[in-house]
Length: 112
Image 1 (cartoon, rainbow, N blue to C red):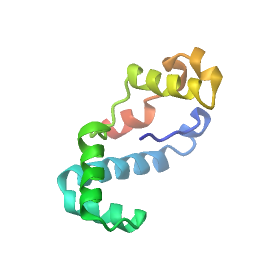
Image 2: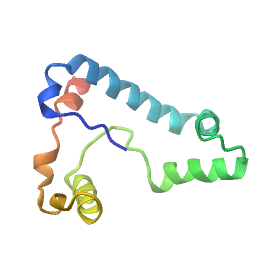
Image 3: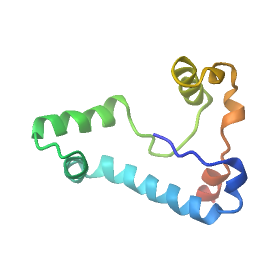
Image 4: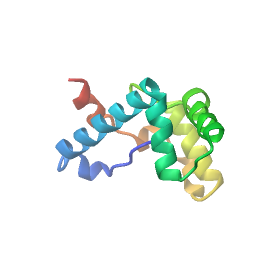
């Protein structure tokens, strides 16, 4: 999961992005801290009613896919995304460098 913002929009709307990222962080914390609520939200938005399927979905995103609770960005993580995009819908992503892609100004502001 990730939030994508144009670098040119960061400074102009920094307060908006900071609020969005804080809310995302809180949602991730609730996902891990209140599994019943997480499954209820999954059921509401996916219309899935099978408790076993909801449990397996929650477990997948908790244990395998894993949300990053501290919202850190890593070069290997960005590289995986670029590799995926490069092999599917955006061939130019194969040659992009992770450093070209991410900017931590919003995360830095949250940590202050």
